[in-house]
Length: 241
Image (cartoon, rainbow, N blue to C red; front, side, top):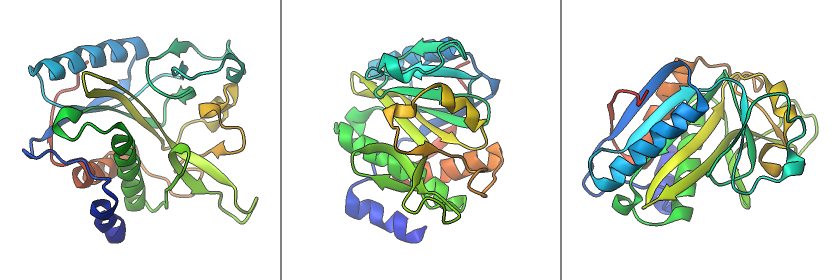
């Protein structure tokens, strides 16, 4: 883990604020309605851009649902009747959200961190890989594939890889929203109703399926510590809803 942390500076993955201002860190209990969460994000992003609210990372879980990013292809929705489907303005294609998956909505002011979208995505990937290190999982980044990947365990399908975390973001006035989703212990069968992120040659997995079970509290602690390394300090904040 130390090696990965030291490599952040060399790779330019860290995106610290020059003023070292702390981002808010909030968590919602239970399952949060998707449209309500989206509306809360929209309001917070507008306030951040206007200078009337601070940055915020919001941790939550959703009830089972599919979301379609701006690049989603209709043919990748394999079972449209299975769960509610929401059109989303984030980047990417179809993804699943549901219980057992930690969603982190990341509302950061990139005008204070460097107006570089590609660097921001690299920073998000670095954040997740550092958090996974803390949870005993070796996450990897692959050129041309956004997200965080792991080698398939057990010697089966040599070279096979599965996605353990997805990333889909949007920027408005250089403020980010949407964010990342990390599979802690969701029902992986729920992913079969879509082609996740449009990728057919690789699967999806979770911490539990990898033999590295973690509670949501342990996952949140790892995410928080890794976020501080990549993006800087945080302070506890109330959830938007």
